[in-house]
Image (cartoon, rainbow, N blue to C red; front, side, top):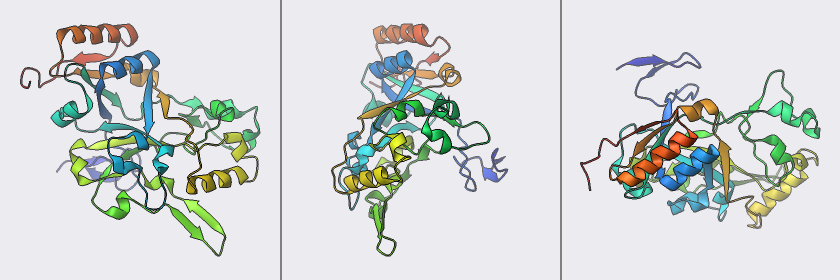
Length: 298
């Protein structure tokens, strides 16, 4: 067995693991996403990756909790795989016969903004205190004037390896906890979106995951937590509104240039020309290649 050293904590780990068991450092360098020409064109033109809410996923159980209904509408994900080999099941499930493509990008490919600079002229400058730079994958200046907020800032804790299980308590967890002595109620939204049944294990899935709540960022930090408590109560009572159906994260310039695209094994020549022309226009540094399955399947 080959042994590697984690670049974050120095722990020795097997070359077969995908994350350090000691510090959680992601050991993989790239991830793969199966989709179609239309989505690729939007990614190239807008330089963004779209996160969709859990209630829109093909696995209907993703949106389930034992004590709350439709709570997955506040969790947004983008689904990828670490399977370097072409996965025939993913080709068939997530792409069309003659328009499918597989995108490869470095892990954490998102652009980071100077968080301190974005809030220096707002009341939040007294809340976010740091001696160094704070980089954010979310534009805090947009949250200040919009009705949504998230605790995710740096983006370093957005990538999760899906755990495949048939444990019902993990698949359909209880999220609400009440402490009668302290008079507090908490909702563990972070427990959903990270587990799927073993029947999905062939996907070898990783996902970027962010929770967004329907509340203004500045309001949450300026009214002693009253807005946050109201939002939590609304979620429990099923009255909270989804802030948006999806969220787009901007791709970092360097990561964008490292994009690799594999064409569907059954792609038509016309669609191949269309893809190559689109990539040449928006991302000429990207590498395009034929599927290793081309000519081997119908």
